[in-house]
Image (cartoon, rainbow, N blue to C red; front, side, top):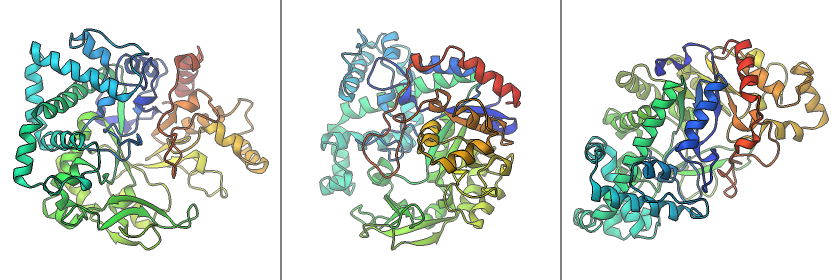
Length: 489
């Protein structure tokens, strides 16, 4: 299989973030259970595994506000993998792994053993540091200083460190040498594990589908190290921030708070920052979703002193020029556009000019009349259809929440199937003309209320959902495989 040809034939995938994988420890990781999940996908005829961004998160756990656009989350590292290589003398049990710090302590222990033994991986480690220096040097120093400062935002660091005074940074490099080495080791281990997992996925005809938020968290290595590319003042404080204007769902809009890009400066540098970002992601994934793709055409600019998104305005972005630059570097450029919400003809034109598939969400399909573009009979081949996304409730919970009138409309459109929900909705997605359909794992498990991954606009209780193999019915892989074969996926 050529992973770059993911969308050249009809395929089906499952949406599941690695943190949602089962296992004894406090969160899913990219160890043994990830390999078992790939085997499950293969047995069900699924050929795409979609997930959320894999970067290191802040304390809220959101993968859409990461500390780096390049780094992997060290909390996804498999301790079993390091134990298998002799870097850990014991692999902690479930009772031992009660919080993230214990997991990180185990990685630190492995690092010390790794330095003592200097086994066959040591040269790979040195090569990794050199090859990834375009982002790893800044990231490892950023995290080391951040940890030294009690994990507070870099905008609150002492002025010399905040404003990257040369002498202060030189002193930090020397005084934090051990911490920097450990952080680089974390990234080396993460990418070793990830690329091994990717090879295993390809061996089983599975393509990996990643997610790239268009904007970057303010408290991140990229804004600290490359503030020339962002709308921040000389002290690092945001001048204008990202969001979306008021709409049907919110009278005050959404103020995300991410610093906006200085697109003029980025374009003057031939979009080098974006090319480097895409290079890392294409190393990890075969297909990438661009979150908030409409921001490539125009973005909502909000003065940073505004508490809501009301008083913002649209500013044109050089999306066409950026996409041309990316295509020159990466051919093909396997990306999907998250084009949900209020989308203008200009955004559609930009997406269509570069032949980029958009998204269709079936949970959004039944709110209007028969012309709703999310209804399956309105789909086109060049799109990706979902029953729901990580921001939606499970399809069964969604259906159960509908009033009688809307529920009747859904069941009538889906042919008054005798099968229980959400299977009629899953069948509608699989039978769509779209070249790729993605079903959240919760829907294949027929899970109802209480199994949601994220509720937009809330900050607590998100990103914690996990499944257990006991929830998987014995005949589920065969049932999925038969349905996919029926609709040529």
